[in-house]
Amino acid sequence: MLKKTIITLITLNGIINADMAPRNHHIIDNGTYITNISKYPKYQFLECIYAPGDIYVGCSKIKDNQLLDRGYKLDSFWIVAIKKITFEEFGGIDDHSSELSQEIVRNLVRKERKKHPMGLLYFYDNTNLGKTHDYMDNKYSITAEKYYYEINKMSDSNITLQLKKRVVFFDDDTNKTIDF
Image 1 (cartoon, rainbow, N blue to C red):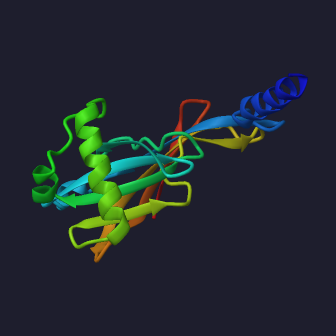
Image 2 (cartoon, one colour; image 1 turned 180 degrees about the vertical axis):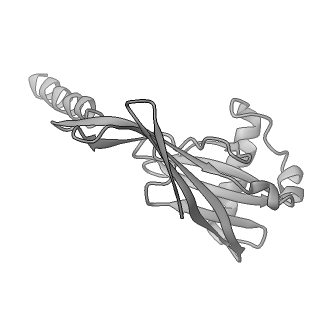
Image 3 (cartoon, one colour; image 1 turned 135 degrees about the vertical axis):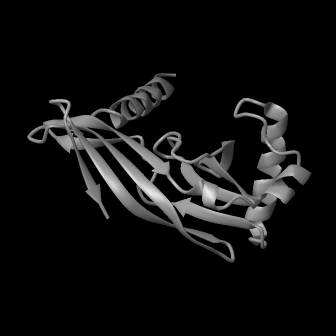
């Protein structure tokens, strides 16, 4: 019993400390947006989140200039483009909370993820895209950053994104825009 208690306390301590900023740092908020989804009217774009162990968390539709929701920092984050006709044949997705539509989309994405067919394109984030927060040294007065991407290319089974603009916000309520 004591051994289980100690293991539980160690595990909880690691989880609790995992979201704390390191010494002499502060947490900044990040936001990520895709600005040109409307240029691809034949596709439905989804942001899909998988927890460690390939456990499906959920998918939701993405629109132009909508803040992406990456989920928790250990989750896998996918952007999926499905031809709208295929998406509608599978029943689509009404909203993020609909269990039935989530199940349909989960099955479609899981099935199609295995074989990468034409009509289903992916951007898998193994970088910081969609990251909701970061750590910043206290000597910098940055409070938030927003990243604006455009879809640069869609081919075979891949979506290529290009960073177009970064907006940095400071604690004196000013901001700086950096174009790429």
